[in-house]
Length: 48
Image 1 (tube, one colour):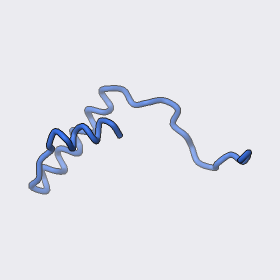
Image 2 (cartoon, one colour):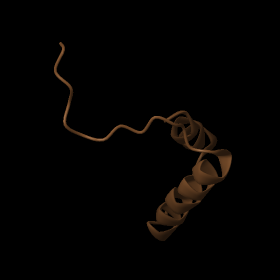
Image 3 (cartoon, helix red, strand yellow):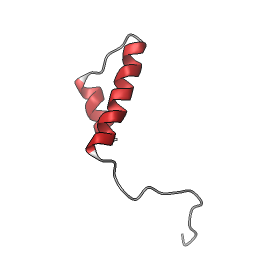
Image 4 (tube, one colour):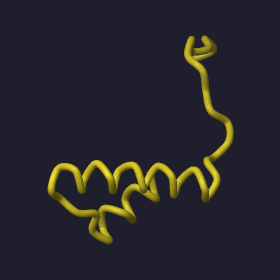
């Protein structure tokens, strides 16, 4: 297991503003598809 993988790693977590922007984008997509963002869906996205 000494070999390094050949893809980039992100060493920092996104900030609150980045998370909110991503969730807003998902909400817009749900809305466009006629669906809605539920509290459980939002929480799962926040955890991811």
